[in-house]
Length: 285
Image (tube, rainbow, N blue to C red):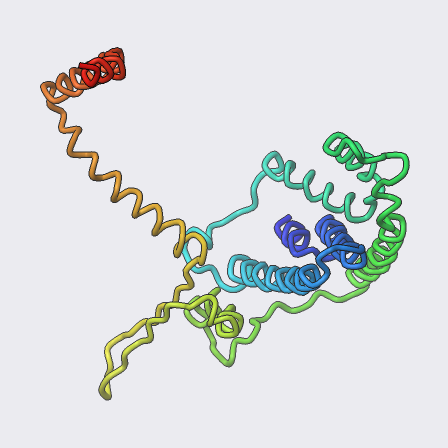
């Protein structure tokens, strides 16, 4: 199920993510040829969306490789077992929905048309609908034409192939593989992080090796989230520090709370005093 969800999020055929991204691409390309539209801005959005899809593929390949492949990196991972069917059934339903939407998007078009007609009063459902704007039938035919041969070849090879001998992959001659030898998520994404170093600004702590018999050293690398770690968290800490100034008013002393109530009552009663009439009479004299 994880693979199905990852492929769907990456926008690869024949799942629902591909259909969704195709709608966005067709909308952007249609806006480019519309008179009076901001064609230059839309032209920049298309490659940006394509780059986001490519980075999503790299991200989920990294996650799948680090989590499901290689030797277990902890005792809990080594003792992991499959969940019961009652826990997997909701995920199976969602995975089936991803396949249905990707293979037969025409079934979803009437629902989307109803939603769009409710959202936009000026939308003419009879004159223009999604089925008329997007070649849904062509998408279904292409998706089925892609899935049927792949599934058929896979089933044929599984039935007629011999049982493969299980051996270590990329063991490099090591007799006993350990988690320390295999790839980690950081090493897997090192090439992409280096490519976008000017944006990500990774924090790298290199090991210091001195002498002929150096002590054990470690290397640590971390890529901070641009929005969360560099914007939201610092702003939240600044607000927390500013609000910390008000803690001096809450010391748990009953006399202070009575004083606050008295000041509040005096301020509320002061709003009933006719200051304007009092000042007017004062200057009239």
